[in-house]
Length: 302
Ligand SMILES: [Zn+2]
Image 1: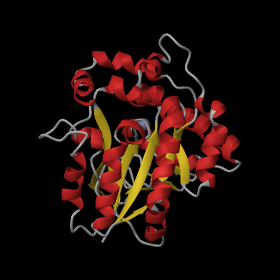
Image 2 (image 1 turned 90 degrees about the vertical axis):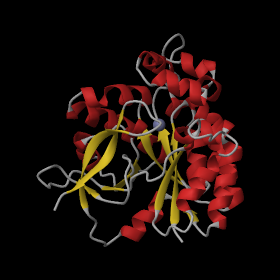
Image 3 (image 1 turned 180 degrees about the vertical axis):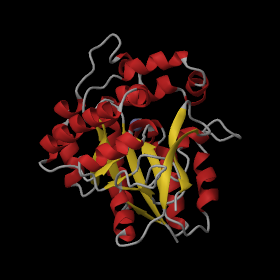
Image 4 (image 1 turned 120 degrees about the horizontal axis):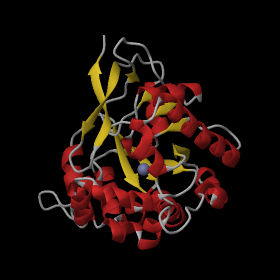
């Protein structure tokens, strides 16, 4: 059967403090490996409230009860309360995740800033933001990061070049179907190998076709039954590490019953080592269940 890489996006201070330790305990109890990608700078989640003005977001709030997941305090950071600096406050906790044997990497410096600005700013902006996150990661862990997974799947060619400049070795920044080398339209390599998120997230499925927080695992298990292709599943410390943990636990048990192995991204990277991977562009597309457009694996280029 397949390997399923568990990629944990940690977006907020609250998710870092509460969700991460709970997920570490769950993964250890189940014998699962995973990759934790941290937000390393200020938590400005409250600025995401401004996104309420964008079409699609209100529907998502209603469907997944964002307030209940993130908590009122978190939603006020960057609006009425100063944004706490996650990396400064939680360095020992972040190190404890690595010391427990899990893979750790960079999600972002400032999640809200990256999500809201990446596609509007130039390549130098992306390089600066990534450099800040890499510097903080190196201060916390005593070595530079090897893996990067972009906040909110907001990513483009310039960000891939920034990863190469920061000597990131592997990445999971986009949605897609299989590992690839990111290239531009001219076929030039942009950055490290991409291991895209291949499965929908739980919050994208909840509210669709009768899926709820009690049964949504069955939708994913239907997709992976009998499948032998490696998968990447993204979960959030704020959701699966808190309110959605019971259904995550059922999902993991179901995957093990189906014969799959739960791994970190590095396991897929090792498996791809020495292989000639296809070369694909990165495009911006809508993804069912998410507002706005995300970076998606584009067409294969020669
Ligand atoms: Zn995120």
